[in-house]
Image (cartoon, rainbow, N blue to C red; front, side):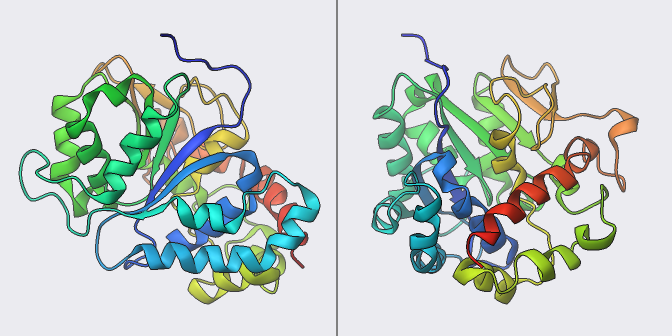
Length: 300
């Protein structure tokens, strides 16, 4: 059966190490939640590394719940807070220790069930932490690859669990996968950063004191990093079916590794601060920040 790709809300599952050692996942979760009406969110999975747990996803949902009346006043498409809690699951606690996954976490099992419940549509898993739970899900039920699509933020995340990433790379070359190792740095490196568009000045003007979500963002980190957010921006402006086309979340190239594998564009003209592909994100910085600022004003 062919996968339907007509105009629809993207179906997404987020795998995040929110609450671990890097506060920028809280930042990206705040950003996602103020755009939650644009997506059909099928799951929020707490994944490795370190000490992040599903309770930290709930912390972000609590802030969202306090702002929910204002968000719903703008669009009735924002999901109910209790629905988001229902689809939030604990994934693996530890990185993969063997060459192949040996267990199946609650979160990984939920990924399988949600993909199987939507067999006629692509389901995108946005990986903000280690790719541990995705590896478990694919190993346990390879058939989900028919409509599974992965956009992963690599770099440090991969370093924390290289075995899960290498398992997928070596054993599942047919996996639809954008592996973003350096392009994501364009979220906070380069681009328009003058005046109110700076990493600090933008937050001070447009996020701080903007609702409970803005308060959570500010308490966690007072400047833009949000290295996982390009995985969300990818769907807000651009064609998700074509990773090689321009989008707010970057554009990528095939390497010959597999029929549906893309990664950072090595073109020297797209390098920012020694990070290949970063300019495919930061060239849109003014546009995606202004769009986000409009939404945060709803919470003021």
